[in-house]
Amino acid sequence: MLSLNNVSLTYSNGNTAVQALAGVNLKIEKGKSYAVIGPSGCGKTSLIFLMAGLLMPTQGEVCLYEQQVVKPHRETALILQEYGLLPWKTVWENAALGLKLRKVPDQEIADILGRVFAELEITECIDRYPNQLSGGQKQRVALARALSLQPKILLMDEPLSALDALTRENLQEEILRLIKKHKITCVLVTHSIEEAVYLGQEIIILSARPGRINAIVANPAQGIEGYRHNMSFHEKCTEVRDLLEVHSQSGIRLQEQ
Amino acid sequence: MASDYKNNKFIILTIAILILFLGWEIIALLLQNPALPCPIPAIAAFFQVFPQGLWKHFLVSTYRVLTSLFLGLALAVPLGLYIGRNSKLDKWLSPQLYLIYPIPKIALLPVIFAIFKIGDLSKIILIVIIIFFQILITTRDAAKKIPANSILSVLSLGATPRDIYSHVIIPGCLPEIFTATRISLGTAISVLFFAESFATVEGLGYFIFETWSRVNYPEMFAGIIAISLQGFLLFLLVDLFQRLVCPWLYT
Ligand SMILES: Nc1ncnc2c1ncn2[C@@H]1O[C@H](COP(=O)(O)OP(=O)(O)O)[C@@H](O)[C@H]1O
Ligand SMILES: [Mg+2]
Image (cartoon, rainbow over all chains, first blue to last red; front, side, top):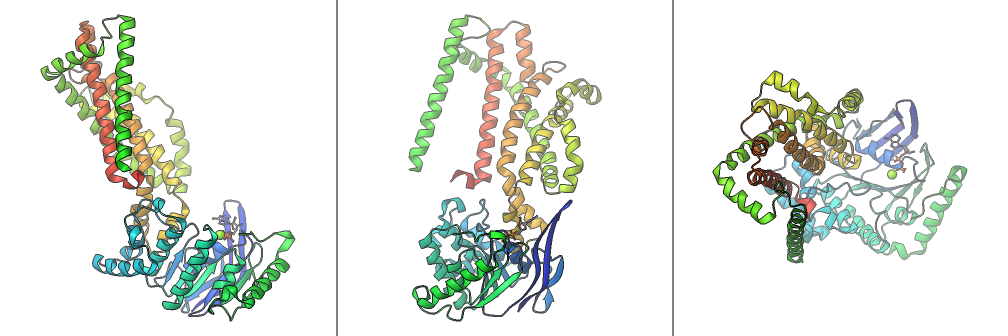
């Protein structure tokens, strides 16, 4: 449904130019989940922004349903690094913002959010401000805001990297459950190999900057019951780690979690 | 817990007031100068003088301060927000602001009085010119500092540039705008005091200078208490307003 055709991106500020991505070709298929992993600064966030329509490639094109993406699309939702919640809005107002901007009537917003909040178990946080939430709760609110828009594609940029190990595993389960239940196509950026293997049906390995696709690892066992404790999970992690190390140029090491 | 905190604040405020009056008492006793009366007779004099006509000067000055503050904010805030979010415009304007900002604009007083005559208008214009730049620069810098993440997350929800202003930039700058308002309030009262010291027969500045010239120290000091009270009450008003408009800062 989403495809990147020979996409390159160069940031230019005045007289300095930084090439973030080079010649990326990628097809995101409906209903699948993808994990993107690569060294820090290799262009993962840039890639997600391109898919979200927040950035335009300097070369090539990003297409959704065969149409070039030139601005954020109604069927895509994005969860940013650091959650992207607004400190001056309550949890409810933050989560309602997407629907409000789409001029959905208040009653309908209340119905949708009531359901989503119950599903994510954050109903008791409704009146709080983001600074009164734990990291895990913030992430749930960000998820609620994204899900309230009933997206077909969910893009996530390192959604869990600021969380402690236990909360992170919890939320990984939650994300897995939600994308299955709502049949959402999902692209998730992470710098954790385990997270990539746990959540990605396909694991996209990027090179150091400028980011290119070094390998796409199929991960057919993803999503099976208790995958995390399965031997094949650890084998897949080793496979991905080896690929990352082989390709990481000039000793640039993958950020450890 | 919340009420504990409120009680604490109340106690701290009471202690602060006591210290203020005690310090005043001690200094007045040490100096033994009729221009600085002790707190109790001074306050007694204030309550005597205020209903007799000081209240009129109080109202006139308060009107001038509030009008100037309102105009200053109405002009500087939108411009500051716009310049802060428009780097090309900022590049053009910031050298000019840099040049104008340090000029002590109060020196323009004779010019402004010559152009706008000596009524309310000239005083208000003088204050507006002075606080305009303070508010403009604070607002511009606040708008520049809005995290890109906040803007991008709202853009990804399908926001228009107008939505970005109303949901992100304006609320994000409000705390700094309130800080600028407090600073400008202090500036406005001081400038007005000076501007009222001549060529007018109304206002607290006039009242204080006039009683001083008659060496009527108790009345003069009542005027000083009135102008202090004015500053305090207007400060409270700004605080109250901020509590209403920025509830997230008080959690
Ligand atoms: N707005 C920008 N202007 C200039 N350079 C940028 C900008 N955003 C990112 N970059 C650079 O592009 C490269 C890729 O950035 P990013 O996509 O954020 O990487 P990642 O998310 O993989 O850490 C980095 O070297 C970064 O410094
Ligand atoms: Mg990143």
